[in-house]
Image (cartoon, rainbow over all chains, first blue to last red; front, side, top):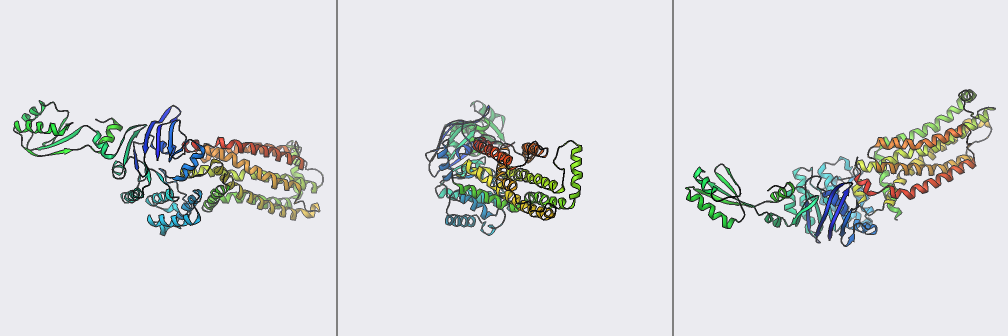
Length: 306
Length: 261
């Protein structure tokens, strides 16, 4: 559905997006993770035909984003929720949606039905004749989501949909995206909310000007070789530490009689570690494996954290 | 190109104007004050005209306020008619500056440009947005001006000065063209800058040629007759056509979106 190959955008000497390549299939939810200023919004703008690319290729549903005729076709089949909701404060909720429905060439009946459907679904139907400017942030965001869906697009571009929202509004928006996922919409989700990405996305790309890594949340978590073993001892003493020192461990930290040890192959390494502790007179109270999280993956690639 | 999309954009803007009364009221007040005030002034101070003429002569302007007072009045009325060309430049500039810049400020440009509209449809929509209200206000004011002027000058000059061919050319040809020119220039400026002050200041600079033209008329370097007005119309027409054809290249969505400050 979305095919990107070596997509690059420069602003003068600054490269905002560098040779980005990925594929998103129909009905997939793709999470584009990265820090502020990573080039996520620039990428989304290129894919939604708002700005041009410097080089590379990008096709949406087979249409070329850099072709003028194709770009009109692309804009008909995509829905965009930009970072700023961009609603007309001086228009009512209904008129905001009706205006966009007209520009998306929806029939009068389709506009009427869809406006009623989405406003009811998002709990805004009673506020349809109220100026959007008087809405709370959460209500505005819901209205902006309704706007991006008014023409029933096949592909949705959502830029930080839950940013600056309170937890309740965030949950409403997140649940709504999950509902859209069930409807098999292809969704490109810009976010730096790792929890959100993990819960919603089928595929995640970690991006900081360049695409660092791409895969399912599970694949990404497994991609980090370093795992951690946590061993709670009754007491940590020098004898135990000396025994562990002989094992040439990669990294060992001690927190309140709990040893946290970096391991590459827990199945092989854990028995050796336990043997060493027990031989040194240590008493193991419990032992757990700490798997790497999406946060670890994100930090590793974005900050270069090991 | 789908013209109806431009109309959709314009009608949306008209709806938002209803809530922006502070933007609209000054547009109505200025030409109305002028259109009501000047005829009253002409009626009240007909005998002062000669004094004004003398004063202008003292400062060296060879203005044609000499001879009978009916001549003086017709010269003044003709001269005041030119003000409607200036209104046609001034009034739309406020709305036009706001048209793109307002969308930028409200951050509504991004979702708008993400819809399947072409740059030409957007530009045309923004021209309609500023054009129709301003031209309507100018026509309404001009009608008041003409009726009141005729009422207060009929006894002195012995005939109804308005309507006349000069005013017809000004209102039907010059005013629409100057309005479109002003709108185009202001839309171009507002698409390239990000604050209202800069747009207004640059817009005022563009007004200078009209001040120059007015001085030429007042100093009789050019006279406000039908031939000259038609000449001005032809020049304006060419300028407007050229600017419209190049505006698509100037107003690039890429730059509008990325230029923030």
